[in-house]
Length: 335
Image (tube, rainbow, N blue to C red; front, side, top):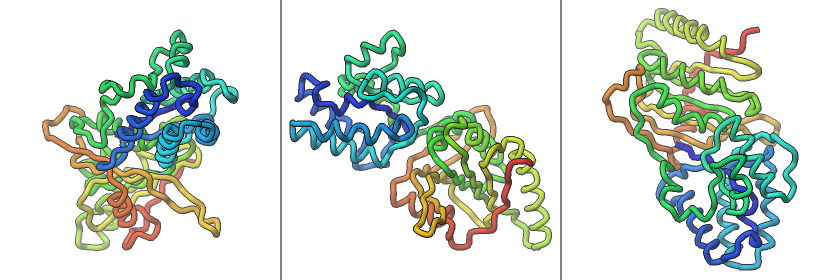
């Protein structure tokens, strides 16, 4: 549901494009297709070399003489800034060598795949013997370049396939909150499989905090309800704790009532007093999830949430100060 792009600096280098009119058309196509006005943006952009790429390309844009091309590049870069995801540095600093930047993208792609590595034709040709899947900016006017890039999906009712749709989102988040009324019961297998994917991501992407928000036992007697809840928590801990490493953590939330299936994820920011707080970046509305692996026939629709819906669900369930948020059961790595 999120397609990751990596761009070499030559995309923004005026001297790398002989046909300036074609270049401007290509830049406009990138802006309109990557950042549609009428839906959630279905793309993210690799901030290569531990977040250095985004600042490295700014001087290229500032040097552009053609004022329209500079404006298109500024618009493209401004939108990209909102969708950047940091990629760990792999090789030596690429300096001003576009092929070296391309090699850096290929190297981090081998750790976790990047969907589109985009450069200019000269760099693509230079890399042909090393990595044949480099895309050229010349291709952005072709419909095939954009195939599969959408803000919605209709996954089959197979747990592994559904979880894979969320992999990219989880890879680039510092925290993930799965909201599923049946996450402790009939849809527990989905919850645990998603957790497995989250916790098995490459160590270079850092630790992650995972929250599972689901309905608690539907029992009137408070003592019995607490006993059943503790039994569920103990079982979940037995499944989760062996997979926990480092400083990653998991919290289980037992709500009295939930109705929707939503996944919300994001990063942390530091408040002025030094306190760490969540900031939401992405959300997915999930109509149904699979219970097994046999491809049940139910149709289902998933969609990336637009900003207002994302903020609403974050404040309602995942935010630190969400109203009525239960005290969590915390699962830490085994000591």
